[in-house]
Amino acid sequence: MSVEARKHHTKKSKPRPHKHQKDKHGPEPEPDSRFPSPAPAPLPRYGFYNRTKSSIFDVLSFGAKGDGVSDDTKALIAAWKAACRVAGATVEIPSEFKFLIKPITLQGPCMPNLVLQIDGTLLAPPKVGSWPKSSLFQWINFKWLHNFTIQGNGIVDGQGFEWWGGSQSNSIQLYFVTSHWQKKSKHIPEMKPTALRFYASYNVTVRDIKINNSPLCHLKFDSSGGIKVKNIHISSPENSPNTDGIHLQNTKDVEIQHSDIACGDDCVSIQTGCSNVHIHHISCGPGHGISLGGLGKDKSVACVSDIVVEKISLQNTLAGVRIKTWQGGIGSVKNVSFSSIQVWDVKVPIIIDQYYCDKHLCNNQTGAVAISGVEFNQIIGTYSVQPIHLACSNSVPCSDVDLIDIQLKPSSKYQSFQQALCWNSYGKSQAPLVPSSIDYCLRRDSGSVKRIARSHEHMC
Image (cartoon, rainbow, N blue to C red):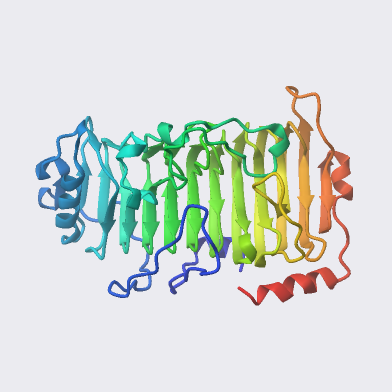
């Protein structure tokens, strides 16, 4: 399927979770058979219905104080339940108010075209000790929703500073693995909550809002489809651990566009079970770049396909665009395009790493997630450590990797840098190529490497 076709194609079947994959944020619940998720309907256009007073459910009308101190959780739940029964309803978080919300699940099925209008500020509990131990997986959880929109000029503030206690900055030696963080505060749980999480939801739009300082991932979509994210702003400090901007898992038919993301981990993370994902016009930094993976942890099955990442700017990030898989994994990554990528002072702009490890040492294994059909086209700018890092498996090499118009120069800020690293990667390159060593990065495939890659695709 062509790139253009993939952008507009919406599959009718519900994506199925991959039971073999373990998520780094915790175990996923099984879908509740009492609430079947029908096939997604076409995404409604902007505006939906003409909103009337009778269809607007202001949380202040349900007893919320909006002073940033009082617990307004029950008021939000009451407003949600009332709006859920009305087609085209709006749950309104009004401007100039701050609402303290404890961990909450807002679930459907609801009447179609429900809107959560966030113009004020939603605040998570600031103290780690005030969180129930049974509610550490997420802060605001949306599930079983169809034709739903979050929009507005407001802020979703995870107040995650206490959760990050003892975080230390990255060392430059760990530039192609996830940062190794040391936890000094014993009272901080190992599991930390995601700010906004969608589960088993379809035709969802998130636009215009700000999401700040999540304890963990800021915005996550799991086992969902028909997702549109536009013009959002995500912000957390560079040294906030595992605070991914947008995290996709078992989710299909996604468009993420025209957004700014600054965080302590991947600006966008694409995990197993994702396909037909289009990411464009994103500003990333600080952070770890745009990443597929890590995939195949603990010998699990990982399947990712039809990913388009284009028109991206990255500044002062750990990586640029990368694919990372664990040794011993099963499955495949195929049909991935990275194009029109501008980098400034990025440590390593181009990465494929089939030896991914988030520790100082991982055991060598022969199995690997097959990587094939990957294009890097027009990656231009400056790097501070290494221009390109292609470390592919001895047993399952990377195939059909294209390097086209790569122009990467060392940053003026750094005098010590490394040459391109290429290992067991097969494909073709096309000028201009800077540094010139990139021209020798890829081997020519006689056909055997492609056969190895195809033998792994049937597992997906």
